[in-house]
Image 1 (spheres, rainbow, N blue to C red):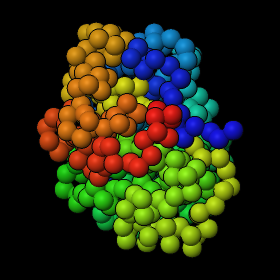
Image 2: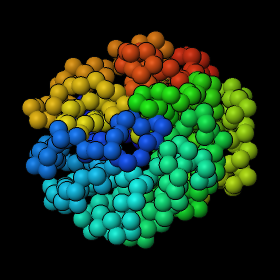
Image 3: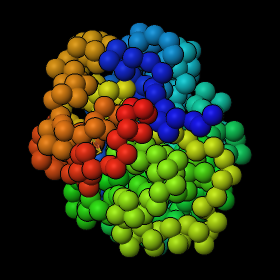
Image 4: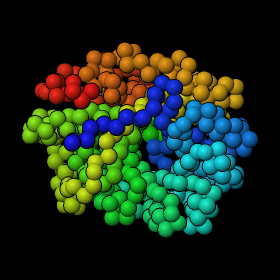
Length: 392
Ligand code: SF4
């Protein structure tokens, strides 16, 4: 039996998120070009205290079982001296914490071992170029690439699973097959291909066109049976997964039907040269989660928003339980209502499983319900609507 090309969050995302991301601090010594948090060197005195952070974790457990994934991000979570204690408390409460550290000198093998012993299961590391020159320019400091590779190895040696995050901008497009090759060679739980949201310091980076985005998403699909890959803030990858599934069953030429361009051909050629177009493993179907619909973000001061890239405050966990904010606030309920989507997203037959990046719509237009600016799809134009209807 063929697997369905999409995966569901296996819970009612109107009442329980799939993932809670907590920005433990904004402090970070790096100066990455795309930084969402516009991180700074020092900790904010208004950060959630250890006690308040523990209370936040209790609020997360109130969503019930299965507990949402719990990601501690930053800034650099290592800037908090209570990090290990918080991870232990998360474990005691039944959460399975993942940590997103920055590649600073604090990310030593000893620190990673301590993290694992405290109860962290996964860390994510950023890799935005396949060479030291490319990555370090992006990260704003020399030596970060080498430190990232060493931390990657140390983390795996100590028993932590590693997710690699890559922010896609116009400047690193052609590095993507090389980064995918590194991921395959060195081993990772997952490669997260994140399409830039033009916010924070990322505003200054050059954006992709909708056509280039289609090429990138189809390249990501192509390598999905050799590299464990997912996309972040590229919800239309779910549309691509459905289209590619139908076209493969039909024996149709995806490049021609989807009108893919020269960038796709270049990326695919490079992927083939690395042996990345094959069938080593089962494809990982993209999961149906979007800002406010399965995803919730809590800032360093306890402000809740639908995503770290969608700065629409919906309440503060210091004043109102996270469960209430997630389930009942207007910001969240409106994002879960596909009927409120505007432009092409509002008219799109893929709207119920895609919906576009609400963060990018907000960053580009100021309206979180506007159409996804980096999607090139014309609703109703896919030539096999009957096949599609059976999958939706
Ligand atoms: S138009 Fe919107 S809903 Fe349709 S595929 Fe594009 S981003 Fe998704």
